[in-house]
Image 1 (cartoon, rainbow, N blue to C red):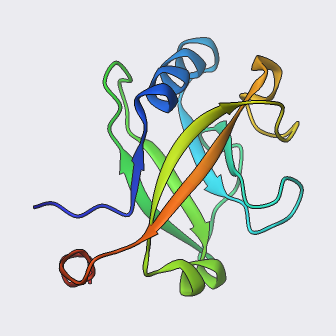
Image 2 (spheres, rainbow, N blue to C red; image 1 turned 180 degrees about the vertical axis):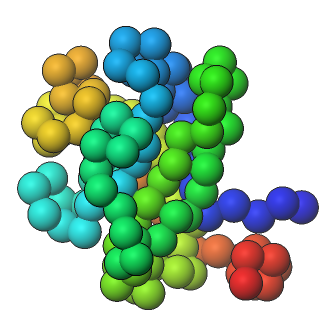
Length: 124
């Protein structure tokens, strides 16, 4: 088994491919409650500046996307969510104006569950 901290639904993968084709390489940063609640925010790679106060949770390999899509979270938020597996999904509705999918009439959404003991052991 290969444990991951972040996965995507098929619908989210389709949208990520479309956004990649239109805009270029992508990245995500999990919002900590500012702007659009706790929505994952999609940016052009490097548009959101990450640093030592951020944790790279996953480099997502999406079929049809030539480079991994990085998924980040602030270190302080990660301390609260480190036992959680995140799944990026997409639903109808308008999200934040800062996220690339906003003009599409849909928004990315996080679904979460606790990591299993086996997943936690593998990820530590």
